[in-house]
Image (cartoon, rainbow, N blue to C red; front, side):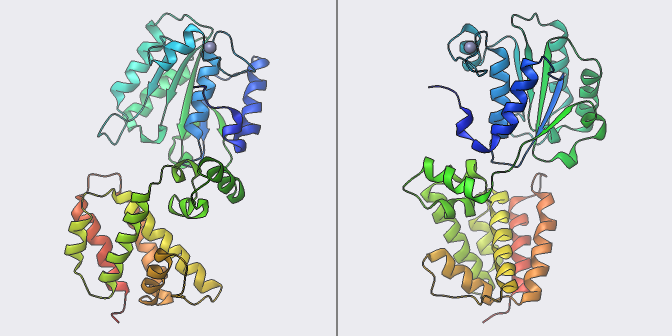
Length: 330
Ligand SMILES: [Zn+2]
């Protein structure tokens, strides 16, 4: 199977052309910081740059997928490529991982025109790791390109930013996203999938029927909390094992919809086509306009605990408690 082509992500085309130009004119930076929204393909874009640099006989400036270098890349054993990512069950990229990067730069013999290091997600480096990376950025090695990838540019140290060339990938507009998802999954409702995936096309195509079912089941439980049919402990227990970043994103997105409905004076209608819509309308009725706004801000505040080692049961309980306090029992 061939690797991705530019047409896989039409919204990347201009950025890709810029990179190709820089490469042809031999103006490539030592460090490239790629930023872009989650779920829009920025890691694949970075990988595409890496493979095109490592390939010994590129076709149209992209990797050939046939040469020795491409083959070793695909099998994860290319000696000129290093990838640094979050290790399993870890929340941060450690200084030890960045030390391996310096060793790779200093001691590895290069076989190709370029050596490439891909570090993602760069905002998850701890302070020691970031300081150690700075050293490598200050003393760039020849023919080595460090590609840093982030979805949260504001969290990157200014000292790191200033040593990289910044490449901000554009976010696909709604129309591009819908078209793209439709092309991949012609039999599914592209709008609904994108809605569930916070508008992120790459995440939208990963959504399964089970996910759709889960979201509905959670909406039912949330309605039961708001109407005092179930206790928060009962519901939190049922969702304890579930990814709580998904749970909180659903809640925040629903509130955004409610708040938008208020702005256009759209009253909740219980005659909607989809099951989820009628459930959400029933939840919406439990909240006043003011409490929706307060609840939204409270949930945004809770979001910062997602990547900490907070107890999942307590975390879900605290979210549900906010709904309980915000809602009026019917
Ligand atoms: Zn190749």
